[in-house]
Image (cartoon, rainbow, N blue to C red; front, top):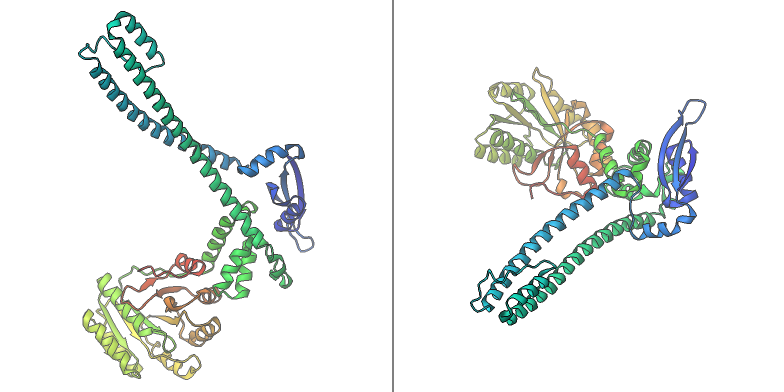
Length: 478
C-alpha cells in the first residue's frame, strides 16, 4: 500500500482530488484541518489515502471476488461473525453426532440378534478406527462365530460409509453457508456501487451553478427529500449543513448517508410533547375553513376525557355553521361533556368561569379565510381576558407551502402557541409541513391522521414526521 496526501479548502474538495487521482479504490486513512478559515485566508484541509501497489494485483482481484473492509473494526466484526457461525455449525454437528450414536446403538442391537444366543460380553463392538482389528482378534478366539464376525464387520463398514457421507454433507452445507454469506456481502457492495453509478449523471444536474455542489453520493437522498415537497431553499441549506458536518468516513456507504441526513432533518424542527400537567388548561383551535378544526377538537376531547380520565368542557364560538354545533353536541352527549355556545366576547369569560372545575377547556372557533383579516381580528377579542389561553393553528397537510405560509402569517396576530396538521392520510408528501415548521420555528403539537375519533389523533414527534417525509406516510393505528 502507498500513502498519498491531498489538500483543499474544504474536506469535500480534498476528497474529490483523491477520488479523481485514484478512483473509488482509494482507502481514506486520515483527514484533518491544517489551517482554520479566516477573513483573509481560506481554510485548508488534508486527506490521506492509501492505494494498493501494482505488484499486489493478484490480491486485489481476490478482494474483488470476496470484498472485505480494511478497517480494523470491520475485521473484528468479521472474526466475531465467523466465530458465531463456527459455534452454530459445531452445535449442529453435535446434534448430528447424537443421531449417529443412536444409529450405532441400533446396529449393536442388530448384531447382537445375529449372534443367535452368543453372550454379548463375548462380542464387544467398538466403532473406533481399530474396530476391525478387534473383531479379527475375537475371530481367532471364537472361530465358531466366524459368520457373526463377518456380518458385524460388514455392518460396521456400511455404517462407516454412511457416517462419512453424512459428515461430508454437513461440511459441504457449512461451506455453502459461508459461500452464501460472502455472495450476499458482495451483492450488497455491488448494489451500493450501482446506486453510485446511476447517480453519476447527477454531476450535470446538480445545482452547482447556484452555489451548491452536491456530490453524486448524496444524489439519492437529495432527490427523495426534494420529491417530498421540501422547499428548495430549505433543502439546499440543510444539504449544505450536512456536507459541512458529515465525517468523511461516513460518505463511503449510502445507508450511513441516509441515516445521517435523517438525523439532521430531525434536529431542524421542534415538536412539543403533550403536557402531563393536569392543572386547568384552555386550548383554542383556530384556522381557515374546511381544515377539520371541529373534528380535531372532538378527538382532543375524547383523548383527554376517555384516555386521561380528565374533566373536559367545550365552548364553541362558531355560530355560523349549525352543522358544527350539532357535531360537537353529538360527541359531547356520548362522552358526557359539558358544552356551551358563546356569541360575544363578554359571554366568553362567563362561560370560562362556569367551566372552571374542568381540567381542560377546549374552544372551537369559526373558520376564517386568511384573506379576511377583519374576522380574524374578531377572534382576537376573545383572547384579551385574564385567562391564559393556548392557541393552536389547525392547517391541512394537503395545502401547498405558499398557502400554508400565508395562513400562518394571517393568523399570527393571535400569538400562536403551536401548530396542528390534519389530513396527513390525504397528502402525497409532507415536505410542505416540514418547511413551514423549519421556517417559522413554531412547534407542532398534534397530527390528525384519519377520520376515526379519537384514535386518529397522535402526538407530534420529530421522528415520525421525518420518517413519513422520507419513507412515505403510514397510519400508526393501522
